[in-house]
Amino acid sequence: MVDIVDIVTFLVKLSGEHPQPDEGGWNFKLVFDDNIHFAKTPIKEIADISQRNPFVTVPKGTKLSEVVHTLALGAERGVHRACVVDENGQVESIVTQSGIINFLYNRLNHLSDPKLEQTVEQLKLGLKPVISVNCREKTLDALRVLHKERISGVAVLNDDGTLLTNFSGQDLKVLLSQDPILHLDAIQFQKLLIPLQQFISLAANMDAPANVRSPIFIAHQHETLRNIIGKLSTMHCHRLFVSDESRKPLGVIALRDVLEVICQS
Image (cartoon, rainbow, N blue to C red):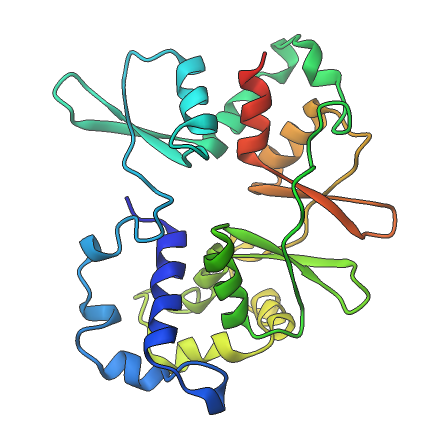
């Protein structure tokens, strides 16, 4: 399977193959002029290049609890999605981590699990350290952090260490949002050399869909699991940053963390 993390991995690998120190790390023109790279690269060559998107299948008769377990704990660190296949092995649909969260949110009023009323602190959520970048760093360097840490999103911090926004591979959609033909060239990718804060401002000022932008999603230690599921679903986000009252990051809660708690029920 291929997702945005694979695209990030591929781009970071290209940046290493075509360095341009004077411009901060990438000779975009060379990348796009080289017929063996990018547009000419077969999709099969970047499928799971990040080694984080294994092709996982589940029979269509599988219990939902088993699917949740696969998404939370399968393939060592959980998988983002699983393909539902029929008796002939043909894919009928795809179940995702975010899809399960949305399913739970739509049924919260009918669920009575005591854990839903426990707080982030009680459930020991948000204990993962926050991986962050300064808002002045180049966008390409932020992509390199995603690649190095094998994660899909980082916190972007102001100079005083407070949360400014979130940055993830999904923000690469900004490069495409003004072109319905999805045309990419060296000029578009030069945007990756500008500071993150400028890149984020560019996204905010463009007439782009809301889900292309990266607002910051904050949670607090006193919030319940019910509230966390509600935020993840209604805000269409993949992570919440646990912060103190001054917006200093304390930890991060990912979709997988919530599914793992659910598996313990």
